[in-house]
Each structure stands twice: as structure tokens, then as C-alpha cells.
Length: 119
Length: 96
Length: 130
Image (tube, rainbow over all chains, first blue to last red; front, top):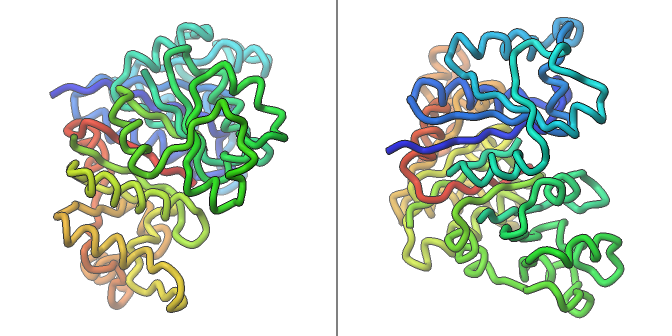
């Protein structure tokens, strides 16, 4: 049985453990040979930002974790176009490659997945 | 078809606003817990919500004494109705 | 239909735990299967044996445990979340030299793989957030 799992990351890094906990689910999913996608939207896009210094707040860096995702074969990472535009961010600001989706494409992504885990 | 389950009040949280940004025409919204205030007659979110199929959880409405204040657009559902909605929709997404 | 639930809220702080319990009772009452309830983030507090609410308040851990027993539901608290929040079974308590564990009977402690597995085998996965 294969399920298509979409994890939606809406929380900024460091302020709440929920952001980190969503990424931990992604890592756990990666060993199950299922279809896994991650969408960063709203404040969640900050998790991807380069130049983080998590140690300044005594936490492990989100950027370090995310930059290791390709090693776990987690490659289907998406960002919401409007979210990055509003925050004056581009792909060059991110620690890992992502695909930018417009609003209709985000809706399509959600509709295509069987399990939606929204954090 | 996705069932979007929203629980925080839209005055407390961006959850409903984010849900409305990402919802498709064929999807439905279920307002539960503090989010039921979004369906109150006074709610500034009424116009936005009216363009979607919106259900409101009865127990939460009654707990808050809002049963005579809901706009007629919204359908009240029981806990059993909540279960039925999750079955009728291919997937569910929770906004909190 | 086969359901699994993901519980993120803290009992007594977030209404969502109580909402989830009502949902669980409804789906079971309608003859559906509740495969697993996975407690993550602050939801792990639902598995705390030491929870002692006033007599006239809902005993959430107890009600979850009773539901699990009556309907053979797998109740799992996430080990990473649980250890951080001081919910340990006897084995983890021993391993970390913390004395006796406080995981309520009827709950198991395990990894995120259990959430993923539940998502794969269930027809519906519903999150009750905080």
C-alpha cells in the first residue's frame, strides 16, 4: 500500500517545537518508501532561510536539518510563491532546493495527496 | 475533496485566514472549538465564509451560547456528523 | 472505515483533546475502527499516570485508556516528545535512572514510525491540534 503524504509547514523556526516536530515526521516517513512531499507556506518559509544560528537560542539549527534532507532522499520540497514574495525571499535565500508553486498549484498539491499533516 | 477543520478563533490566530487562502472550490470547512465564533452574526469573516460550504460543530456552538446567533448559511453538525464529514471527504486537514 | 488520530494538544490546556475523545467515541459508536491514536507534542501528557483532575472534571487519560481497552485501540505516545516532557515508561525510567516510570497503563511509548505506519494503513488520519 502506498500513500502520498504531504507535510505542510506553517510555523516559523525556534518559537515552537511544532516546526521541528513536522520535520521529524518527514525524516521518519523517509524510511517507509512512501511518496512524501513537504510544502512550506506562510511563516514556515523562514525554516529554509540561510545563515541561521540556532545555537544562539540553544536549539539545533533548522537549516542544518533541512540541508540534510536530500541525503534522506527527501527531495519534493515546495514553497508557496505568495509567502516568499511577501517576505522578500527567493530560492537563493534557501539552504535546500525547492520548487515554487503558485496558489492554484498549491491547491492541486493538496488535492493530490492522501494524508495531509498540517503543522 | 478536502475537509478543512479549523479550531482557533480567527481573532486569535491566522489559521482560518490561511485555510481560506489554500481552500479549493470543492472543499468544505468545519469550524470547531473557538473557531465557531467566525460563524456568529457579528463576524467580519461572514462574507468570505459564504462563498464556501461551511459546517459548524453543534456542541461548540451550544457550549458558547451562540445557537441563536449563527448566520443561516452555516450547517450545524453533531459529533456523528463530524465523523460523517471526514468520511465523505477524501482527506482532512486541520488548521490550528 | 479505519481511522487513526494524531493528538497534539495538552489535556486540560487545550480543548482539542476532549474534542478528539468525542470524535473517537462517535466513530466507534458508528461501527468504524479506530486503529491508532498517536500522541505527539504536548499530547503525550495524555499518557501521564499521575494526572489527577478534580472528581467533578473529565479524567482525560482515564477516558482514553478505557476507550483503548474497550475497543482494542493502539494508544502510542511519541518517545521523543514524551521523554522531553517527563513521560516515561518503566523501561525508559530505568534506562535514564529516573526511578519508576509514569506512563499510564494502556499506553505504549514508541517512535514516529508508528504515526507513519498508521497513516499508511488507515483510511482517514485526523489531526487534533493545539
